[in-house]
Image 1 (cartoon, one colour):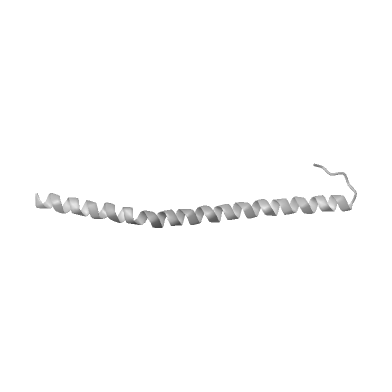
Image 2 (image 1 turned 90 degrees about the vertical axis):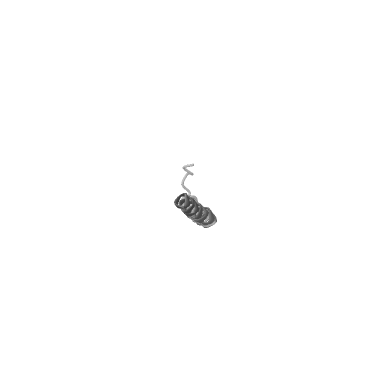
Length: 67
């Protein structure tokens, strides 16, 4: 039976280590989500600025607005 207890203690220690690692994993995931969101928002902003520049160019040339 002592071997069974030792094995159970090893498994408990492994589970504890995995549970203790969860906050770091959550922090890493949150950082990744924030970075991805920032990148997506920057891409959308760049696209909007490009559209704004195109519309400004069209208005300066007195061309009809395609939108």
